[in-house]
Length: 366
Image (tube, rainbow, N blue to C red; front, side, top):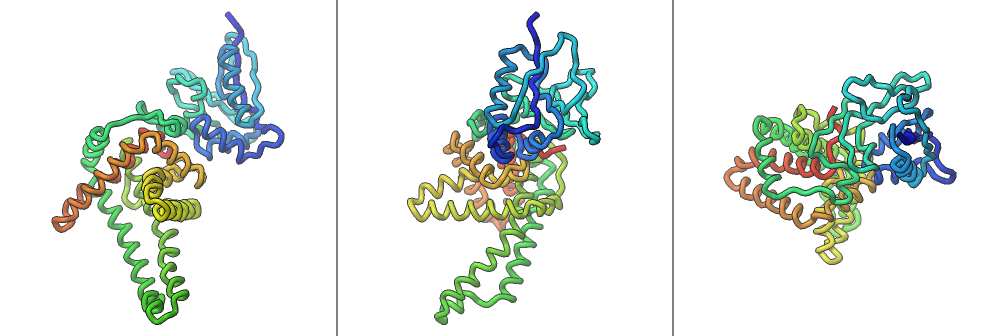
């Protein structure tokens, strides 16, 4: 029997490589969230990425890691030897006890859940955090960016409708909470701030334009974290996780990246519409998963926007028609006294989550 090797991350970056550079490359290569990549980069002990590999396969992992800027090594092991130190990301056998522990004073380990691995670079798709859920059929970040997913329009509508059963009340309440906050903001800005249109009519154009932008400046950091919460609600429902309407208020800890992403997406989309219209329509659809990637996988703003754009671009027309049908359905549902929205709003939110699940997989369910 030939020699076997463990692939080990040393926690040391190559000369001239910053942590941010490593994290960006590592996330793109292995389909892992930024938070998890940073845990590897900042580890004070070895991280066993994969064990018991033959030399050729082990070198593939080593080359991939070094291509991201991390110093990696191969540890030759005896046929029956086990590694009992360092952080482990190796899949546990059915009766195997978790082996991963920090060699420092910390007692927190990071253990990969059992997973079927076909791609030789796919190991870090497993979660570093405990109890993270991975279900068959979900996508991965790397796979999504590469367009390695597929679904039919009928499948998304069918699964979305099935998952609205028993959840409509939660989604309607969540959207009502969002609208209440939006109304309060609108009332406050209307009664507290000067009338921008009146100022413009009186000839004070500059002041009027400035005051006209104030409500938007205020509403973005106050409303978009709730919108992000609504998005995550649909994502969690797509994997049958527990959902609560009030959870939409749980994402103000990411108010800065969410707000920056909202502003950038708005600016780039409007710019595209002003220039040739078609680029704006393209970006409007292409950035639809950006917010979800920020809150579910912890990606940076531009990283999330680019991941969303690249993934959706691979199946842009199909996804465009799904959203087009959703928008048309919402218009029709709103006609008879808005009653149809009780069904359509939950359906639309869940369908968005289902598409995300198949593109990137869900990391935030514990």
